[in-house]
Picture (cartoon, rainbow, N blue to C red):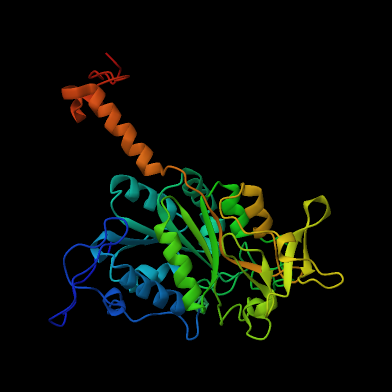
Length: 370
Ligand code: SF4
């Protein structure tokens, strides 16, 4: 477990403000630099991870959180080097197990602000089981999944999100797997906050991370991240400047699903509850904005599933918060239960009594129960 390092600060800094999750309190106002470490960042030149790191460091400074209240837990993979570069507490743990470790930490220390950094291989393959259970339990974690559709650290094998036909060292004739959709998996597991953003769109990424951080419960964010070495431009059809207005759907709660340079296209429900792209306007063959689907982060889950399944090239790719639902967090329920059990037992509520209660027995010298 690494710890935050106090850096030399110039005199005359501002007092820190208050923040979420016990953040704030007296002290100097931290800057983005204060959240960076002295470690050389060992990602390949041009890797999308740099942009995500930079956005996260800036966000934490803007939010006014305290480094000593913040923990980044990661598994294994390129993205999982993240804790080395955050001047907070951090834990570069074992493959796929970051959600389990973070769950234990959050239950034991609910006042901490706990982030999980994972990738498409770490989170959806090796750690798919652990991810699913953190999501359904609604532990108050911020889970960021870097999706570059490839295993980068181990040199380019196809991953659970790779496109069919991906040629890689492990699939020399092309992958025949159907790819996993991270958002659909999160929704299917009962996630209460599900969102998507792009690595290099710092402003939008920061806004989505801020929403994730404010959410009480598990926040799951898929970041479309470029791996220029092993899967360059995997997201280019969606990210590229020329086409992004018609290939990205920016979600805004309460607003109609519109896209295109001037919002000239929209999405409505067609026959058989199938979404369809329509032209927006009052001309022939066009539909008014009122006929479009209106985004509702709190709608029943099947609406968010519908959004999660919208994919290029038939549809624009939804970006932003697909779903945000209030549900008690796991560690809060555990805390209440423990408190209730302790108060019911009164003075008897000691560890000794707990360990000597219930189905316990003594073992004799012969190794058998007495
Ligand atoms: Fe980034 Fe890909 Fe290099 Fe890993 S292999 S550091 S994901 S560019």
